Length: 376
Image 1: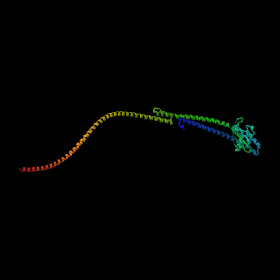
Image 2: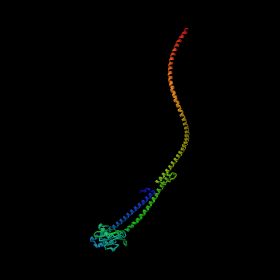
Image 3: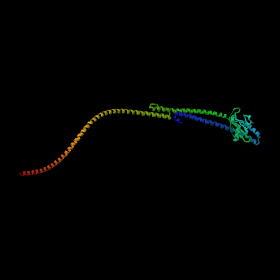
Image 4: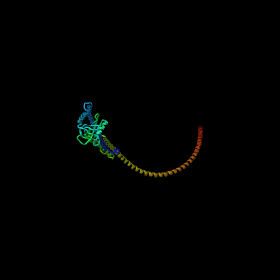
């Protein structure tokens, strides 16, 4: 069973077909065994019915003797004489022996009449008449299988007989069926049924082979297409035939192939756009590189200028420190100057006050002079 998943679908279907054929052979064998058993049962049932009918003949004569209509010995002779002429199924006959066992009447072997049968055995060593008596004593009736020659022949063949006891007279009446007659019915049926089974198995195997191909070939094409697509070839032409599941699979692969073609086309366009953008970026990078080199040169010049500027700044800082010192001194001078100016302002205010007083005096003098002029 572990190897089963490793088999491909064609082999699995072939195995299924073989198993079907084996199953049919098994069914046919069981049927034929059952058929043989049924034929034996039918023959046995027929023999049983025939023996029961023949025992009715004996019973009729026994009752006639018991009722006094016939002498018992005469009734026995009449019964044996009638049974000796009875036939059924063509050549089948009846015989009668007693419980001794001693043969009372055998229609095909009259030399056995009156003989003791206790020591008689078939080629297998079975003392058949003793076995018949034992069956009658035990069950009253039953079947016994043994070997016995056909009428007019010497070679014993398999035979099955049904024997039944006759109460009151201690007789055993029996009749049998030869097994080769069963074979004559059975083997033609075997041949016919075997032929029918072989023909049907051949039809099933042919159908299975056709079915296997109808499934395996489209799947093989699908696998080939899938491998071609997996290898990157999207130009494969997928031929879809039929409407079953494998056709649906191939149709799906065809749609997938078309979709992949569209995707690859879109990807190709994208790649071209990316290539163009990459070229532009490369040109920009080249330009940027040139500018970067220029900027690097400028930065070197700037660095040199920065060094000079740093020296100038340092000098300016020194000058600033010196100027700060001078400014501090100037501030001190300015403070002292402010104090002097404040003193000057105070003096000026005093002078201003004095000037107002002088103006007032001059006004008074002008008034006096005006009045003097008037007076003059």
